[in-house]
Length: 388
Image 1 (cartoon, rainbow, N blue to C red):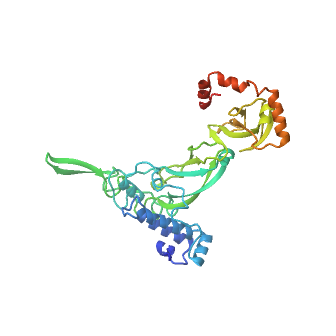
Image 2: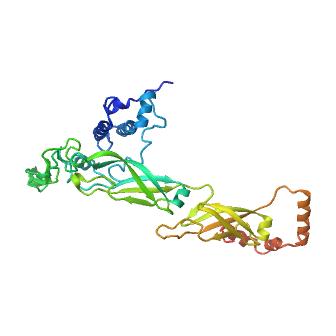
Image 3: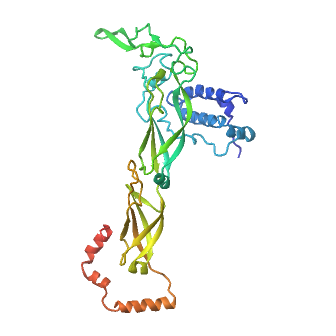
């Protein structure tokens, strides 16, 4: 089966010898056109994913070299390298007016849309998945995000000469223009955002071609996320000023990173505590024993008291999850006991157990038989409720 090779250079409209800065500029230019928030085409999201894929490969020297040589990059897939939802890239999951977004991105230079231009940057969202071991130890994780970042070309001013914006002459800085409209009730006074400044009350005279006067550009950045030991599933980490940049130096939004902690094959977490199944032999259950088990943070000694029953649990203080914000504080580890009865016995083992059975009077009425006589229904009800 033949497959059609995607030409990343053609997609970004750059030559094969283009340098990194040229590729970055091309990506920014194309992203402004195909992003789903500003492009109504049915395949806009797919186009943006492919554009991201092209930039991800051509902006990385090793990936680009492999692509130039073999025409493909192992593991490259549309959208696979990014940690930010399409719904979050410009709004952090908030309701976003697309007209306001389009106007605010271009800084009002190309005309206003419905509503007053937003100056401050929006928050963005991202999600990281980690193992329970990582949650217990804490770690630093790098993520790559596409964001509206401050424009370096104009130092966020939106102006080629980095001059401050001037008062809009159309609205005299009010950001609104007054007009009249004929209605069935006669002439009515109207007020709407200024079409020349987008409602900001200010205009940039010598517009920066890189950001088109907004003072911010689409950029890809790698961010270090410090994940504290003991973090809970669903907890958010806030990275100040790493969200959407504000227009012409206005306040930037934050990046909110949601941490998802994956389920573990051995341990079940409940708050700060951990739960684990601990099999023991019937002799250990009868006589008591010290069991060594590997926990998330090292080897733990579990003191099993004599006479323990299946379903009972042993609590080990301080062997659970770290408690965020409290130094050297940990939850507990609960070991749920399961008594393992051997399925096969040699002659000597069988002889010893038969002797032990006779010693306990198993041939007569035993403790277990007495339990059956005394209110079976209540005992089973408590058992299934976990009240044993």
